[in-house]
Image 1 (tube, one colour):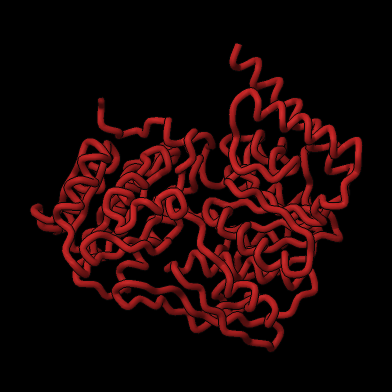
Image 2 (image 1 turned 90 degrees about the vertical axis):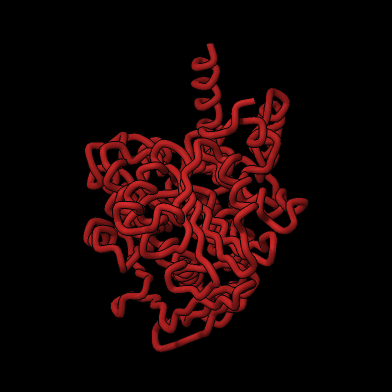
Amino acid sequence: MRFLVLKILKMILKTLARATVARYQSGIIGITGTVGKTSTKETVFIILRRERRVRCSSKSFNNEIGLPLAILGDWEATGGFFFWLEVLRRSFHQLLFKTQSYPDLLVLEYGIDRPGDMSYLLKIARPSVGILTAVGDIPVHVEFFPGPEAILREKSKLITHLPATGFAVLNADDASILNLRFQTRAHTVTFGFSEFADVRVTNFKNRFDGKSGGVAFKLNYGGSVVPVRLDGLLGRGMVYSAAAGAAVGLIFGMNLIKIAEALSGYEPPAGRMRLIGGLKGTTIIDDSYNASPIAMREALGTVRLLKAKRKIAVLADMLEIGKYTFEAHEAMGRLAAKTVDILFTVGIRGKIIAETARQAGMKEERIFHFRTVDEAGRTLQIKLQKGDLILVKASQAVRLEKVVKEVMAEPDKAEKLLVRQDKLWLAKPGMYDEEV
């Protein structure tokens, strides 16, 4: 019965979203990739909103239900029966009575889990600007595909289906993505650290004084150079998102100065390399939103370059990577062993990280493995010392934001600062919650 209701709901949402796209003829900017979709969505939005009426979803609405919702309205979160009634009411109203407040531009995430997902989403809304952020050697959701090449083919449909008048915005530092410029009719604009990127990042540095920090870099395009500073976050990942957003701003006629001014107001999404004050004078890098091998490697690489009294990593399962699960977690264990002073791990796959770190030479007394997230949070709180820097990262089903809440200096601000704090998420158990 539940499956039938869900199928009917998907059909209704798809029909309403397609009708709305046809009714308003808004420009659509589509974003896909293994990592960075939400951050890129946010940077595109913050840049374009200076000059255009633009909407992006406040949540990661990127699947067969979420994407139509993002087209139909600016919803904070999904809900029960009355929520869906309101969705239907508003959707029919804006179809029958054209409203001037509907956005000129929609910035949409296109997330895929299985073969055919991208084709389904493109039938709902076909972008004129497509952004491919990064894929990596072991992409998330690869467990449902024969291999990384198959998932790239599925994601690349966003680019290959662009119109000849459209624009493909491609990561110049990812060779597999860059090669897509030969497979699209659209104009291409590349971004990244490569000297061959159209929108090039130079002079990048992480700024961290032991308590607060951010990133600083320069954007280069067509002979023009502007400095950019983003506060409250760390790592190259956010810089890629900013560069991709800048490329879209340039496509829509903005100059680098206006783009840099817009980015100065950027606030990092919750759970994405966000700096949060911790108990006992510590600092947390909250990267608990989700995890993939490419993202966890980048996060640990960032921590490795920072100065701190002690570096602590709280790591757990990376999910949906299928046959690559064991080797991916082993790789993170080896990297953690030469990156952090203390390693906390949680869960079945987290244990692989812990064991491999031990085999790689990390002292056993510096490795702590836990069966539950709650145990990890309580023990971490006890062991914290002033000046510690703590990285927290795992796939979203693990719910490591609970560890962040346990050790953050101002837990009363959790609703504002952390991921998954709405009632619907809080009611869902995580993979490694303590049994009551």
